Length: 117
Length: 112
Image (cartoon, rainbow over all chains, first blue to last red; front, top):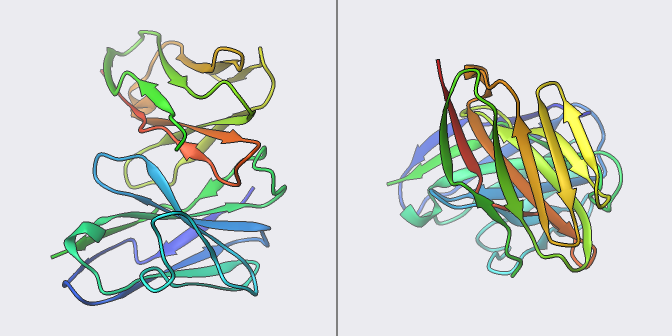
């Protein structure tokens, strides 16, 4: 199993600013992911954070808006850049400690609740 | 875009009642189906990962079944308790993708 912590747990930000969310896993993991849940919507994958290389972004998400770092096997950051009210969401970090085929359990952090004014 | 549907969207039951809800997913190219339980302000908690047609999994009072040929999974809660109140999410993993596609969840409220 894996225990995941995220910082900050919540924030209220002004339009046009940026926020960096940190994700720490208590053990080395193969895969780390960043998700977003907009109000009333499903969890949507933003990107897969790759250790030592650029993140793999899903359709509709770009590196300039959501730069991601993953310097080692236990830590990742997601930055939400040039924020607008539409970025108000819960952002979740997730890790898959074992296999890359996603037939194993994924573990989630508690989320960061972001409100953009 | 994969279509993963959960029903009902929300559900209120009395303490002690048994309940169930549904996750529907594409029946082709199935690889795995995940169930999660998400309480407000906490981390989503993994309940089950199901990979085989006809699979049944159980964890305490919660169980799940899987039918990959018709593309659905049921989650059952026996003798609901107020602490079961949460949003229950299913997530579909097809072999052709590298990501989970989540349903929008069933929000369960168990009234004492």
